Length: 199
View (tube, rainbow, N blue to C red):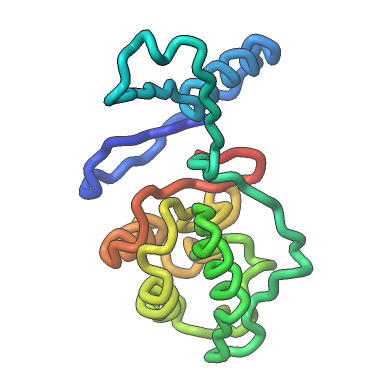
């Protein structure tokens, strides 16, 4: 897992090397549990005023958690989500209803997949477009529609092993996608989503 935080939005980052090696699974999960506890759990300090300290002796206190601050995730079946079959027939109704439900219930939402590099998932009509124009269209339509709604979002899904956009536009397209999203001030944190890992 790679996690980078605190960089200025004007700093470009490129990974030039990656090593994969075996680990002690038990020790790794123990360390991850400890780190997870540190991130998800916090001490609470209760301060009482107007009472003398000796009158609190034997008092019971009940604390009830009413909201989780840690964003939980869930998987959706691919059969429930369809790409737009025809150019120009964007339909955000399902997404809007789900987002409204989460907002009304104070569930934090992480966006997924502004662009997707897997060729079989890209709509056929996009293949016939001027792809740079299609990318600009997304930046003015989707990003404007959902600006400020997500704390995290992956920009270009599965870009480490597929290259639909890069093959058609060139190697700089992925950096340009991030610049477009940054320019729209769309999200707070970027993530790289890749099968079986989140960077």
